[in-house]
Length: 228
Length: 228
Image 1 (cartoon, chains in turn yellow, brown):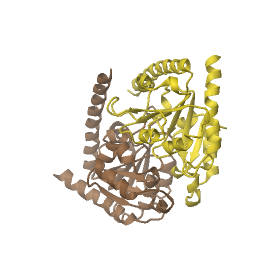
Image 2: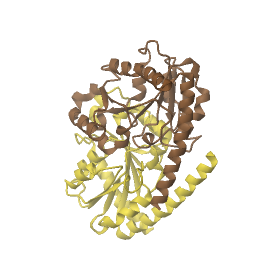
Image 3: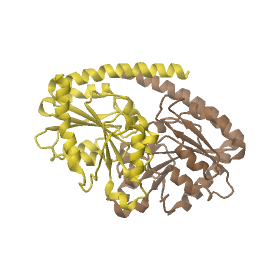
Image 4: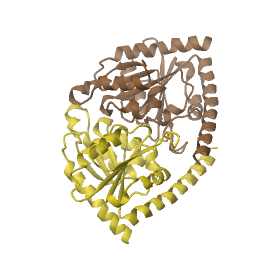
């Protein structure tokens, strides 16, 4: 029974990859680089984006928001005059706990690809399934909060293994937590040795500059990859 | 295509409910009450359980740990000499983001039901799918951390709607956060009006007593329900 289930899952993931490639082709044609941003619920993805907007000199940003229900985060982004598109996984897709390539594909017509250089996709808050579905992205970023404890890379290894950058957020709270940053980094290296990592406080702005610099390199790298 | 998908999902949930009832019959026969404990990753379920153990006078506790990989949490519980059984959803079940009735069923033979009165099932850290799968529990508890923000009930309504108690954890951090507890409670009432709620700090022990008292009533209430 489990074997059958795994085969069905593999078929679904193959189909997802095919659609992800179609998304990627659309993004490449429009010259838009795409970042898939993932985290547990409440790790601070939206606050980090709010901090980022305005610092991305010369790069036109768009945001695609993935949520089970509602538009709380896209409302926050729209308030900052950034073009934002909402995907709700509940009414259209049965309450899915992640974005997949098909959901992103269905949203592409609503995204003004001609008006942006970089599309950040804020995935549904979840450390498991979002990592299993490529959506046509150029890069994956994972935001983890120091309030979640040091053990998360060991408990959700696929998520930490499939991203190119780990942003460690809420470092302003470190003085108030029993949190061992070195232990988190060691656990991170145990599942994804040497992966790029940055420590930030989206609330205070500490460490935001290297994050913005990293983000600004994505369109450049994506352009080189598309031309190759 | 979406319609087909929804139908398939409904069939799977019906099958899950049938197995959940079989689990429930086994638990009832053994006189064991079961609590399904759910939260986002890092909300503090295990720390809350560590605090709880030892305070549950006269009630023999057992724990069933659900994790994608590893046994970090069950090791912590075993250190406190509480019988604990680990379910990993990765090797056996393909990396599932939740426990379902069949996974719990497969673990029941390893749980010494005769030696316990109350089984707490620590679900996989995730605010979406665990809420969709009953496992044969008598009660559902949701742990949410104040570090996750006030908006979580609105973004993950099913989770907050299907639980009988919401434990608001990490209140020791409130002085260091821009967090409006009243707003969280209003959002909670918007999706599950009047649901029982308790504020605790699993780290400092603040507010633990009412939580332990609530937990102690579950075997009593489950016994009455089973006899009815």
